[in-house]
Length: 155
Length: 168
Image 1 (cartoon, rainbow over the protein chains, first blue to last red):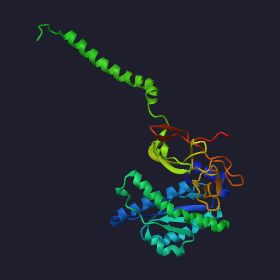
Image 2 (cartoon, chains in turn red, cyan):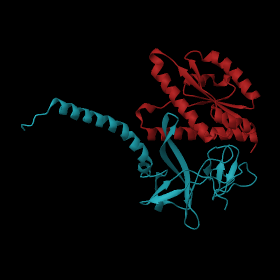
Image 3 (cartoon, chains in turn yellow, purple):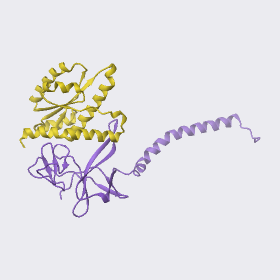
Image 4 (cartoon, each protein chain N blue to C red):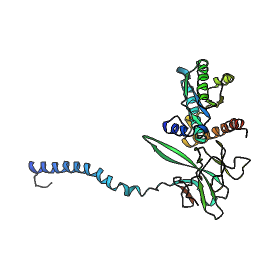
């Protein structure tokens, strides 16, 4: 489910089935890093959207969190708050989706699972190949969700 | 050159009629267009979208088919890709099922759960459907998978909008 009113209405009716939050992390930089950070933001945004489409009955895709390059450490503190609030709301799994490698070394400090995917040069692709590339990437991430859920349900 | 000279009165008359005619046409044209618009629209292919699948290539094993069409969402127009699971049933009829789980809308896939071969499986809450789209009792979904109406033209499969199935 997306963070839009119709989906949230559906969530309120079926909250007991939804236990996973997806939070995209979007880097923002100006100057030299502008192009790179926008590509990363675009890529992880599209990827999160695709994953939401696959798993819409069990996940909530939260609005992505933008942060300035270099402010990751202060964001971690905020994310702890987020996780606390989400857990109270019944969302016990949190997946962060990002293309920013900076999170890889901070992974152990995050409560949720980090899904890092290197961004691909989408700007040179036409619509159809873009879709198939993104779908391939999403397909690689999907088992990670399934595994997390299986652990929990003890299937 | 004719010797007939145009008088000032005639000249003004011609000009005014001409300009007036254009103005009237400018007003009437959109109205006429508006009135006959539904007729013109019926010529389009309707709500059916062509897939890349040839009818002869459809087997008894469900196959994933993606097809793309334009969708207008308020002012935002986008290309939407839909997926269908297509196969021929025992009687040789084509069946095109929607992959959207009737429980909460996740995407189901054919034969992905090792414990339940030859069924559609929903990874979110482990919903199951038989090959014909019937929900397996005891799993979360409470209805059959939606079915796409289909058309065959020039050997190519065309799919319409997914509809809930009538109870058989």
